[in-house]
Every structure is written in C-alpha cells, then in structure tokens.
Image (spheres, rainbow, N blue to C red):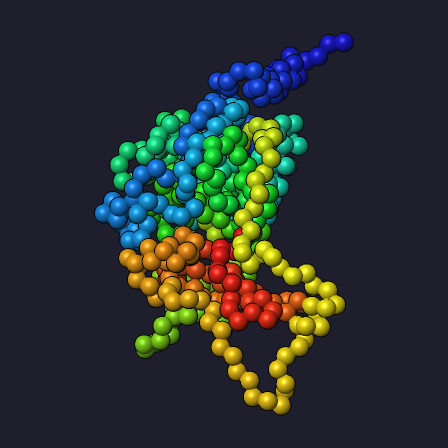
Length: 426
C-alpha cells in the first residue's frame, strides 16, 4: 500500500509532537512546538524554587500600596520549597479571542483586553482544555498554581521576573520566553485556593476542595504593581462569571438603551450622597455588573500531576458541630415564653477589629485573629441551622474598594451565650 507524501509528513509531525511529551519522563523537553490553534508552546524544565513572597514590600516601592502589606499578603506565606519534578510545556502567552472562538464560536471578546480572551470562567477554561485535548490527541490543562509561579519567576527571587519596582510590559518575555505573566488578563490556575504549608512540596495541586479557584497575574482589578508580583495570589468561584461574555454584551446593550440605565459612575447620586458601590470611577452598565471580568487563561501541555490534593482548611465554625436529629430539632424550636419580655445581647465580634487603623492591624494578630481578617467586616449572611445554631459569613477587608478581601465566619451554637472565635471561611 502506498501513502501520499503529504499524509506521511502530517502523521510524522503528529507523532513527533506526541513523542516530545512521551519522552518527558526520561529527559528534559527542549523543542518548542506550535499547536493546531497557533499557540506557541515552550518547554519548561523540572526544578526547584521558593514559593511565596521572600522579600519585604515597603510602601515606598509601590504606588498606592496599603500600608499594612509589608511582606506581601497573608496567603503568600509561609514561604516554602517546591519541586517541579516533571518537565512540561506552557503556552507562551494567554489564549486569544480568535483561539477561544474556535471552541465557542459565539464568543465576541472584550476590546479592552484584546487580543486576549477575557470574561472566561474556570469551568469554561477547563472545558476548552478538554476540547483541545480531544482535538489534538494530547493532554492540555490549566497550569497548577506552583507551575504558574515557577514559570513566572523564571529563576528569579525578586518581586518580578524583571529587576526593579515595576513589572515587565505586555509582550516583553521573561528569561524563559513567557510573556504577560505580570500584566494583561488575569489567569486561572488548576488549584482550589488554600493556605500554604510550612513543609517542602513536590508537584502540589492545592487542597481537595474549596470555594475559589486560584487566579494569578495581571495586577488584579487595580492594575497596581504590588498586585502583579510573582507571589501574589487571588481567587474566585469557578463559575465566575456566571453569564458568558457574549450573552452579557447583549444584555448590556439593551440595558444601556433602557430607561433604567445609570447616568453616573457607580450609580452615584447628586449632592453629598455617597455611592452605594463605593467606587469613584466604576461604570455599572449591567445590573450587579455580573459577568464582567478581565480573567483569561493560558494552557499547559502535560499529563496532570499524580500528587494527592491536600486537606482543605476547616474553620472553627465547621468543627464540633452537633448533628441534626430529632432531639436537636426539638431543642432548636425551644425559646423564651412568648408572653414575657426577653432581650439578650450577644456581641458578634470582640473589639477591635472594626475600624482599627490599618497601621495598628498587628493588634488583631495579638488577639488571635487570622492574618486574613482585617478592619472592615461587612455584608453578613446569616443562616439558622436545623440544630439551633446560627452561622454568619461576611467579607473582611480594609475598605470597600481594595482587592485584599477574604471571607470570615462565626457560629453561635445553640444554648451558647457567645459567638465562636471568628475564623476564615473555607
């Protein structure tokens, strides 16, 4: 049987590309390749690095950096050694609008982040990887958080992969040839967001569960150098945004043309009225601003790490919980006599933290509060449980517009006079 020269060349090229990955366990990768979508995939050798912020972050070095962030954020510690045991391929840059459209033709992209795709959920990013894996017959996936930081640092231990107090510009490659890891769109990683361990790790993949998947790079929503550091971390639920960007854009245009469209930044009103959003330069052209995001992703070509996920952080509110049964349900319905006045005040939080000056946040550490808990605790959600307990979850931050936001929780157990010591919500 005879085969055409063209077919032989195509098959040979496909086999050669696959062989690059199959040889990874035996030797380091050394040849870049371009996949069927035009993505340039660069080889990354195995190695070790220190994960987390190893440097001080003095306010004088960063524009508008909060005064209390002197050694990076709380979730960048403890600094620990990480071994990347297997080589892998990573995309030179983020997925573009045109590349994502080959997966989802209706996607239109955002001119503000072009040519790179944005407004992408973690779920859609992983679906794209599955689609491309089937299309090309090799494994594509999101990078683990450790792989992402390892590549972003490219052998450096400074704030950025470039020297000085500012990250490299868009399109400027680091020492390993990767672009836009400090700038441009933010990027999803594989892991659930969790706290770092003290001990060294090999090929970590994060905790086994959580509420937020890791986001890296791009300076977060403030586009500030501090939030573009190699060590900086963030996270959002994997289904964010819940509305695909192409659907959101249609809704946005209809809303702008409606009588309900806002006329000012942050829906601010005239006079001394303070915007309920708290934002000065934020135009809200869709109800709740749902779906808007500058989050994209880049891909890795490599088998998934075989590492077992770590245990998730369980807050104190999730420990020692009395199970719901017929007895607890009966107790939960028991209350003071309806015909007698009754009032009981139970302070939700000790004082401080509310309205503690940022320069004095060290006082919260002395009280035993988690480092992720800050001075402004707001927007609580309260649940009455079947066993009679009350649970409160709220955000904790310094102010309404800073990216340093976490979720905290506390529980008032049935029959108790005081709320639990608050802890970070998982």
